[in-house]
Length: 303
Length: 252
Image (cartoon, rainbow over all chains, first blue to last red; front, side):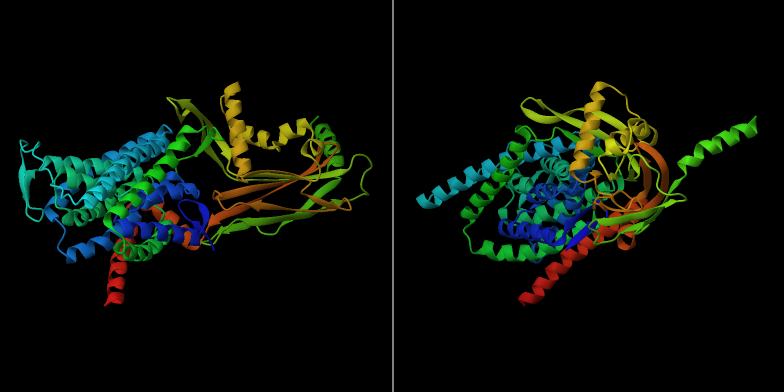
């Protein structure tokens, strides 16, 4: 069934979009990531203009994050205070990100910027996760219990705050910076940034793992929501039809994925996620390195 | 003096009007609806004559359909520090978003160079007609690229032999409009030619517009972007909350 997308101005198969949403939903349920890093390149691939894909993806992330955060609120695993601090940083980051996005679009480098961001961040995160989970598998085989190092190097910073849910007493500056950084990426890459936020919260801020995902989802809702509004008002590139179709596939897929994820071991799960991330990264890197068949491209007027 | 001029002009135009186009379209408007996946327009007509068909070169029919012109920027990728990035670019002030030219015979047979220049019929001429760009040798390769890319996606079509002509009188052709159309008026022209010279021409327009939900969404997104953003967020929030609630109900 072909469906015409009013903003993207292309006709695509509705089942392809439902399927894409579903597959990404399954992965997101399995691994606890937003799946934006996978969906945005896939949307480019089926011919959605990059600007529309990135902006619409932000709206879709709002929906899937709300669905997830409600479950975490019931389990009381959301650190609202930490979430708010991250959020304040995230908002500033999102404004900066949309500004950079428009600037690069004006000079015709937005595709390069988005792709470079993907290659660099997916490559780094994928590689780190791969090494870390290999080490974890080895540790469980040897039966060594790992001690977490306490991060004390930013104890000297001012503006200390108490984060009761996380059991932390630390300066507000590191969370603000982490939030801002993820906000920029969220606007440029059309991702929630969970795949960067989660490791940053665990390893940089030293938050307990059980509150990390809920808190990350909580702040992603607002940053993505804000990004959606910015993209919709400055670029008019949010496509409601596209968002709706992806969303339906996504929420159903997420439930199936959660079921699969519960049956697998955590380390194995992370290895597979790392391989997936590295595969997407490799594909995008090849596109940049191999001479394209068509050297020219047409940029339509900014609509 | 004036009278003599008018008489001379009348005499000059009379033989040209010996054959006239009477044309029709299967539809004069195309509606982009939710399930729009392209459209096919049938253009047909007849040649009206007061006298028997003249001797000499055969009658040829040329049909063109041109979409609204929009500015475009053509960019070229080049290798920089090992990766392929956009480097040079040429701005084309206006290029038709869609252009199809269907003929009974190959275009260079059906239409002489001078007539092509006068009526801007072939694809390169039609683009240059509206696209006033800096005419450098480099700009040329960018215009060629524009034509090549749009031809590959079916936005520019050259269709020699696509017009059927029966008994030197009845003609018909169909033009396929792809799904990624730009809204606006599509100028449709029909030329009758003999020996490459235009004998008669006919012009009409096809209106292409989004309708219903598509139009409403598009207008809202452009005229009330904030309301549109809030609506998008509202739907996203409702869907996220709804999905969570629905699956909780299914489990319990």
